Length: 323
Image 1: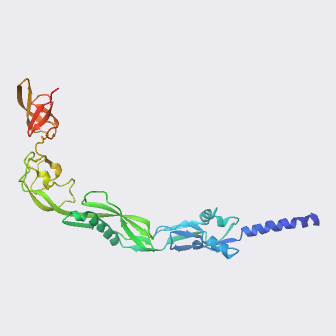
Image 2: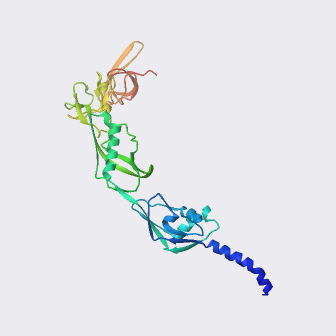
Image 3: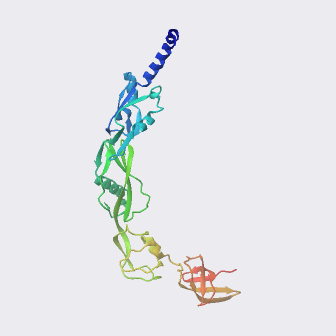
């Protein structure tokens, strides 16, 4: 190579070397372990940043590189994962990374223990506010001790989710959202045991299916949370109401166990009326379904007769449907 050619190449070589030097000036000294106090880890949290000037260093330090792990957990990020998170961010354009320090960083979130008793209290208060006004006495307790929960340091609120049942059950799972800095951090389900006392009709004595309901029941305070169906109300025991099912002494009367006055019950023997051209025929039949006054019902006359359609026209009376 001639001296003249070498002199011509020197400027180009200098520019290339300068560009390489500029691209390698971002040095990241990765830490071994960090404790995070915010939801996202910034580059300054996980590494010491060395850059040509203060403005660039500050811009790089503020870059997000990972979400903080859940409180009580530890997560590791390697150099490769961190570099992938940085790639494409505007502040990194035109720069390459030279790594120093650890091969990976272990991240933990600064946390405190949320007392499980506070979660149970929030669930119980929510149940009492939602259901309590409708009962003489309402009790809600956790089924078991609620374990403590690790949460990040910061302003904290507990918010129970809406309940979708119109009345309480003996066991209710209440979801409680834990909000840190007004953002839902995690949700905890709290199993609760419920007792809800109100006045209901209780059987004074055993009563059989089809019996008149009046006089066999008295008004007593009972825990109704474990009932599968609605208890009977005063209007359900109107004159003529009868029992669809037998009841035992002390049993709470349910609305579904009552048939209103005039209703024909399945399996009940009824009077079947039929007539034409001034001739009236009456016989006995058995109802094959429940039917209220005015409703059609299939009945079976005699022991071996074929079923026919009739209509309930009076208590215990059905009339043959004309074809």
